[in-house]
Image (cartoon, rainbow, N blue to C red; front, side, top):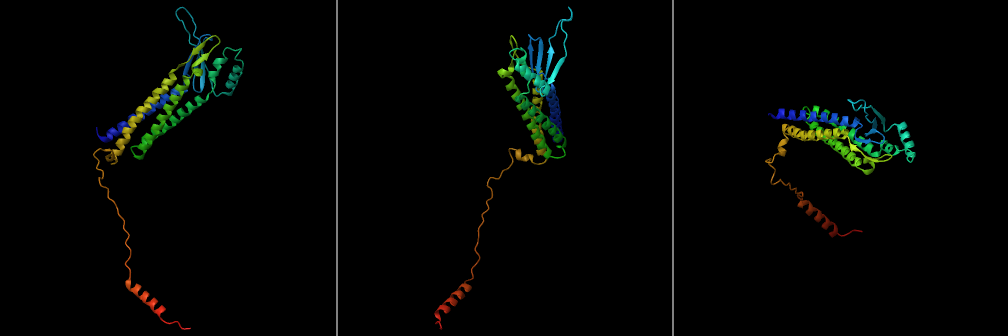
Amino acid sequence: MPSGAAKKALLVLSSTLILVGIGLTIAGAFSPAWQVVEIREFRAEHQHGLWWDCIRAEQHVVSTMEFYDESPLHCMYKFDESAELVIENTLQNIDEDGAAGEAEHHKFWAWHKIVLFFIVSSEFLAFFATCAGCFAPCLSGMAFAFTIALFLAMLSSIIADGVFFLAANRVDVRFVQGMVGTYEQVIGYAFYLHLLGTLCWILAFVCALATTYKFLRSNGNGKLFDSDYPMPSNPTRVRMEWTAPPRDHSRDYSAKAHLVETFASPTQV
């Protein structure tokens, strides 16, 4: 395959993986199913997302042939002030209300904001990388911007996944206290969607490195990466010497003679 065709193929493959990763990460971020728990005593399934939560009433028997009827989700935003006020009032009655312990998981905690910050940052960086990749065939400098932006997007997405995974496995987050029992939350499909998007960006970054290398070789700078590139064995050393200007000895003699005549002649008062 010619070098130009290989370069364009790698660029198209990398850009395609970036777009697929953007779609997967956005789908994961908008889904509430980051953590899912079924609270049997409340006969409900709770989905705890990054910025909104949903509750689905337990499925029930409708006939002898059709056993379950899936009820719709009822959702609320974590940053909604009215919902936050209801949660605070519920937590104040934790001794009387059995659902108060579960209501704590609907709050907008700091680690939710950290994960969202890195997700949003990764989306903008990935979009910028895609735009830079479009101009890379025309401007070779854009190949560097393409690779750097993609690396930062990949790093931000990895940090978001890591922060969520560590926070979700904390004891106070992982387990939900009900009225008569304790239930364990499991990581939902939304996290795995976002993780697949991160993996797409990792593969795209590998292709971007190869793309940048191809662009460097096409511009004549790739010889620097060759193992047989000749390097100077004995670098030239420049030695600077200062030479004093020649002295005029005749002027020195006349000056000395003038001094002798001046001091030898008698002083007249």
